[in-house]
Amino acid sequence: MNKHGLAISKKISIIALFSIVVFISKIFLPTPLDKMFILIQPLSYAMANFIIGRLGGTVVGAISGLLVQTWRPVFIPFTFLFALIYGLMIDFFIYLFRIRSSQRTVSSLRLMFALSLASIIVGVSAMYVTVGAGVMPAAYQIYIMVLIAGTLNGLVAGYLIAQIWNRYLGKRIT
Image 1: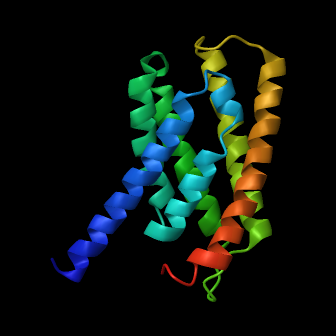
Image 2: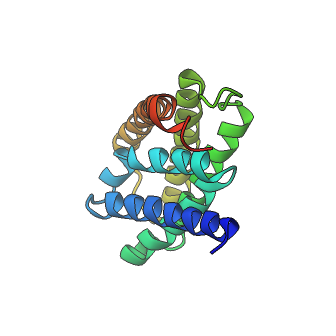
């Protein structure tokens, strides 16, 4: 196999790994708890962006959304769409805030801000759409908890990824 083929197979393997990790993290918690403890999602989507490239988070979001959707068909098409949008938002904010530097490191504060902002936007949008569509009841106390937890998860995920990337992976993967 040539170098190009090997690179593609590695990318596919990484996409599959991150998608399965997100799927497993989502199926063990019932709704709305799975919306509050999302740490694995931004970790996987952002790391996919760093390892695979510009749309890595979007691809992992789409595949993990399809996987979770098969487990919870009640929420079709919302599960897929919001996972896809979440991956796309993370990819977009990583690009917009220029989180990667030329020294193969990432800015912790920018990444924390980007992942929190993506979590807030997708979380609020998902709550608004699912309540408006009648899929979820209007329980505003739960939604405030989801919003706070999502923001904190984004902050923690951004910090963890920056530490892992800057200390271990950034110099090895590029």
